Length: 246
Image 1: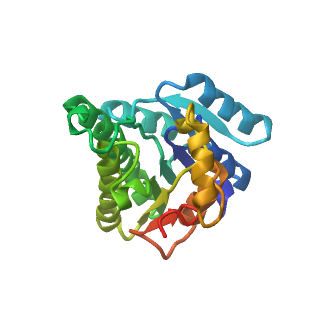
Image 2 (image 1 turned 120 degrees about the vertical axis):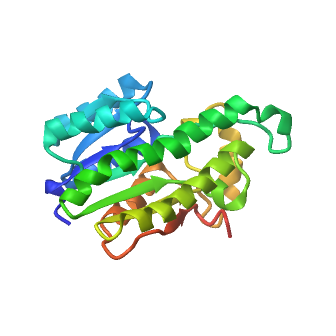
Image 3 (image 1 turned 60 degrees about the vertical axis):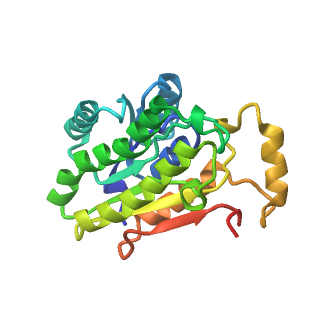
């Protein structure tokens, strides 16, 4: 893949896995649209790092749970750079709720998590698909989670939303073939701000994993980039979890 000719959109690109992915794509030569919903300062800092390093990046605000805002964001990117070749659906939210506390999994929790984690990924894929089909090539990577494979995680609605992301990946792979590949990277525990206030718990978990380490955002970004440039793979769920699910 000639990365220097690619235009990439990374949702939730200001922090954590999203920022690491933006930087990895820029290092390879792609122009990067760093999407954010509320983390404006972090997204602009990410774009600034890329631009100061000689790359091309813009920070662009859009709540991915709103279809109209997603379409407007993609139109802005196309006006700026002409098209969208690569999409990384990274934006996600969660709530920390004990798995067995069914009463705490209220309707508004389900709605928020599915609106962002599932519908948001669909909206973004739908918005970029015409441009990818027009150029007869494109690649989408959704960021899922081992929570969607194991049924456990920060909350029951979160685990179910990530299982839905895995299903969405397979359905989109069928719907968008043959011009567009769609795959999913499913991280295990990753050292991001989601662990804020629970760092000791993260360290204890790291010692129990086969590789004796919690993954870093850059580890996941590497897997995302590998999936984006694999022309013979689609509809696959790639687990990156330091052996957590074994």
